[in-house]
Image 1 (tube, rainbow, N blue to C red):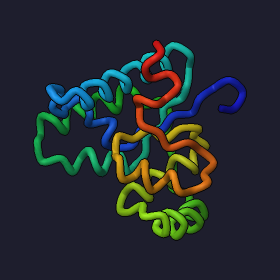
Image 2: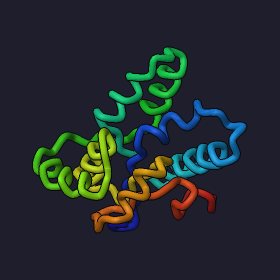
Image 3: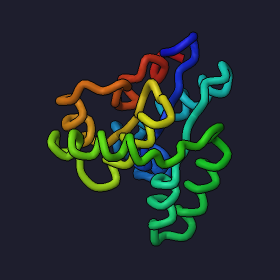
Image 4: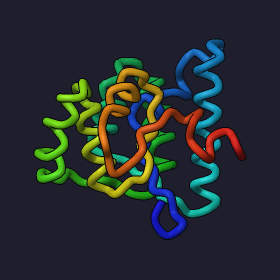
Length: 152
């Protein structure tokens, strides 16, 4: 945290969590925590970052109704957008891959670092496990573990 402001980056799985099966208790709790974090961010002016990679993943959803709901939620929520920073990508990519972070998760990590996020929030257990092996300038965390997630 810098200067009393949390900078937050949710990866794509968090944005789509509202459209997942909430009969699963963990999914329900994660979605609830994500919504609480967003309310808290709005209340206290914490920036919530989006990125091109998030938008690409949302737009890749073949279910048009879900895609439009998630994109609408995303567009209403983000307050800033991370840009692509090649130097960050070139530095982070080999480290992330070495830890087992693959695919678009590498890009999420790079965007979160590039925008100066304090937290990259994800529900992806493999991403959480792999990132825990690294020393990063941010915290990769499940919304249920986020300091503001369950405490509001």
